Length: 77
Image (cartoon, rainbow, N blue to C red; front, side, top):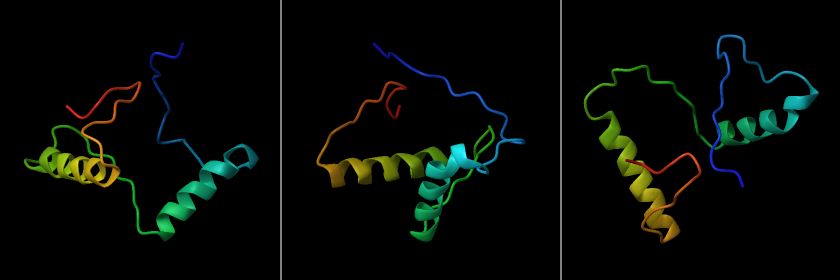
């Protein structure tokens, strides 16, 4: 039974190039074309950021009709 996972990668050398990354590259390209983006926030985060992220999470849950969604890595806390 899978209880949790820990992804460890060096983001300075990580690449989406090559055949093994075709599916991931396709997903990233689709999301980018739909206006999504990815950003890494280094601690300490600015005041209000976690509240903004919580609002995004709450809006998503409302759209799903759920009170909370638990993943193997945890929940928004």
